[in-house]
Amino acid sequence: MMDILPSDELFPGLRKKAAFKQEVYRSTLETFRLFKFVLAEMAEEYRQKFRTDPTQIPFEYHDKGEFEAELRFGGDVLIFTMHTNVFEFSRDHEVMKTSYIHDNKNRSYCGVIMIFNFLADSFKYNRINDLGYMIGRIFINNEKHYFVEGKREVGQLYNNFQSSVITRESVRLILESAIRYTCNFDLLTPPYDAIKMITVADIQSTLDNMKMTTGKRLGFRFQGDHEDPI
Image 1 (cartoon, rainbow, N blue to C red):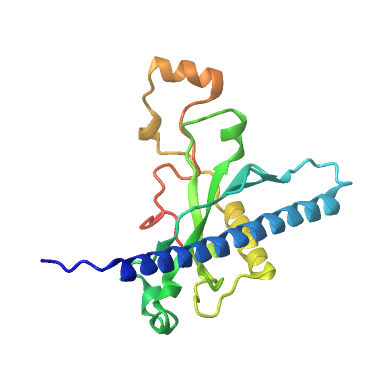
Image 2: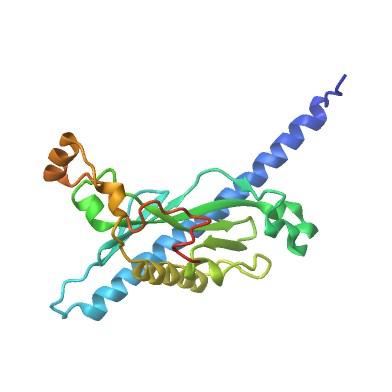
């Protein structure tokens, strides 16, 4: 029969684990607030730089609540979301093989901030079937060390968990990389066979609010996508 821990061991262990996860959560929330601050700062910087330029190219930050933020620029939208739960890397993840984690396994517990890319017109015309893509996610532990997984520019430079610490400068670099990747991630025509047939209901809806699915890559996959190299 399995031994049952007495309350004097169970309850303190429960409290210790919960308190530690709260510490990771607070670290992630502080980081997300820093992301918002830098986004607002960049939007104001853009406004000041181009306030007399007659060409109307938007670069706008919108705070969408405690766990969501939005940046609109050109024809794109970046949505930043913070997950409210704490996660641990799987045993097979490369991060788990580092000395940084071996020295203290608690460092593998992280909060997550995700970055999604959508077309601005998807929201403007309420095209609810349009596709958005995760272009990066940032893992932050209780020591505010971070690790970035992402596409091309977003994930290539920020994957040293041991030495990468969240600062205002590092957040700015992550944001600039996400914007740069988005600008280079162009809209492609979907395969002809994917849209050659359409129902009467779909075409009627399309005439109203463009509900045919649109995305930068129709059939895009975050991993194993040979048509969109990392």
